[in-house]
Length: 254
View (spheres, rainbow, N blue to C red):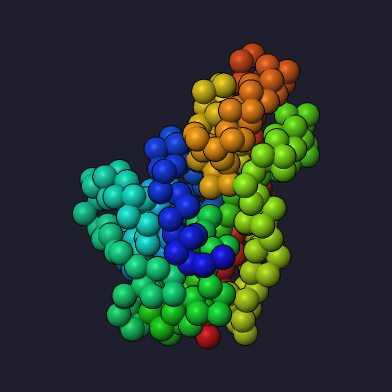
């Protein structure tokens, strides 16, 4: 997919993204502290920082963070939501061209985004901006698709109505994550997490996804009618649950 398309596809979904996308388990930060020695003094470049869900955790840890985000609407949301953190610097850049200085960064991180990167160009850019011995950290919340009746029906909804769901699912990229680290070794850790939603939240969570057809698309109304039916059938005490496996990958780049 052209980088320009990947950059622009979330522009009309910012508010739903802010309100309904999951954060990341505290165990991720604890692992980075224990396994990588992440300390508040380290400088971090968070690539494709978006609205700042992961960036905020780094800032709360005490790190100075350069949030590199190519999408103007997402970047503006991140700036608004992270305005209380003086160690946050917003950068109009991309994974392939961060605009950051050579050997100026201790950790490069990217949450829920590396599947959009050019895997030939981005790793070289990460090596350029990292100090010798610097770390690359990639993480994704991978939605479980078949552990409950609700999750199986929701997955089928996406397969039926998603505009390019099968092509952009980030799980396809985690299978080739080694391309970001090669030839360096890396470690993987997995954590479990969940979200619960009433119907309004479920609809917002669906519409935060880039492959969900938006208002004006022919598939939009029938998709929401089916979503309502799934909710009515599967909700327990007024809620449905998303389950995730948070996949964390980390290693020192050569």
